[in-house]
Length: 162
Image (cartoon, rainbow, N blue to C red; front, top):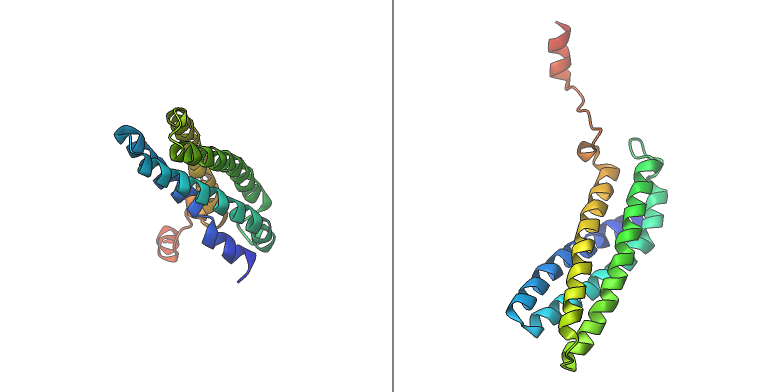
């Protein structure tokens, strides 16, 4: 298993884990249920850990695919820039989540404030995750690129020539 394969295995969880965590956190806040908030915090911490794994395998994956036809360094650079922003936000979210877990366990009055802070950071992370996932998909899926022009199939080309 090479870095490109490892990157494909681990890179989905930071995005999906954050989306699930955000949903669970919202329900936890609305229902004032600390177990749900703690579950979201744990998901955010795991998402941050997987973000670190994704970042560590990204460089190796880049080296394996950057010279492939239809990939190019510009597309990979855009993805890398978005991934760095997402990773930074997820690391902050993970740290805030650890504080939230601690405050919930200690039944501290500031726990509620931390849950709203985590909510704001998680919303930012979801938006960055969407952009990171899209730019990552564009690396190998040319059909989702903004400048995509479908190639004519052989049948269409023959009909046009007649």
